[in-house]
Image (cartoon, rainbow, N blue to C red):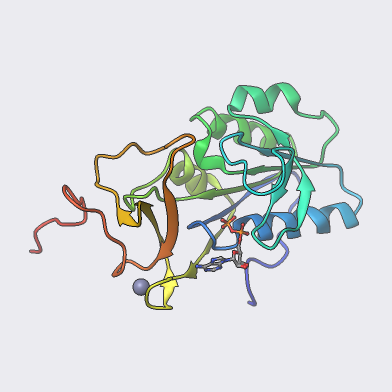
Length: 206
Ligand code: ADP
Ligand code: ZN
């Protein structure tokens, strides 16, 4: 199989998850799938958290290469549910790690009512621990793609989000979500990822 999951079709609905670190191409992949659904004359809705106002306005899903599709801002499962177009075939949700747990029953219900649901999100936080509802979404999905970025330090496949403030790794007890903060992120591999003090990865080896 080449690249992310090939076409998956079944009668009725299903859930696809695009997971991975920042810069791994989740938004690019979501946009690619949305474009192809539009070419197939499907009615598509895209939702995205307000918390990520990267590049273009909050009404678009932006990838780092600048391509965009229009998205509806929503910060909770309830806000998505209120704005669902009853005749949409495809529902895409980007930045799903910022959504509350209600996203799980919502996407389950949408798939159960015949919708193709595409969910993209960062599956681990800056500590390297599971993020929000992403683990549950990955478990209930028919199809999961886990994408990798490039580690900015060693050039290997990156599976971790390195949070930095003033160029230095932030400690473990920093909040999971920083709104409007001065932090920056780098894609790094497990070996190059650093979380000072209380690093949960430092369990004694047997
Ligand atoms: P995501 O939604 O996963 O954050 P995007 O789809 O927005 O990712 O962006 C992916 C793009 O980011 C890549 O195609 C590449 O051009 C760019 N990029 C910047 N830094 C990196 C990196 N360290 N590894 C991989 N791609 C990177
Ligand atoms: Zn590395």
